[in-house]
Length: 82
Image (cartoon, rainbow, N blue to C red):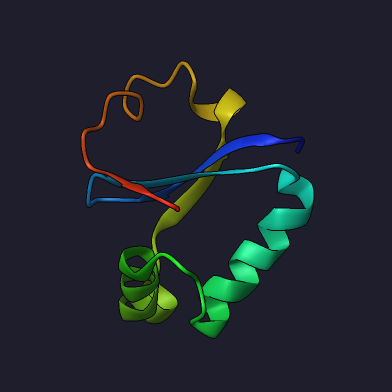
């Protein structure tokens, strides 16, 4: 993974959490560590992550994965990871 946009989709809830990182390859493990430790800066995503426990249903994508996916592109419920 190079620099760019990433998205975390909450399956079954039509929520997409998007963000960008200058070095996704470095950022990705840190992002997952933050979610797992409860310290992710996006409170909405962290709350959903915590509530789901072992039954989490999320998928992780980078821009090349989602650019042509009409099921993801155009979803109006976006929470910016800023």
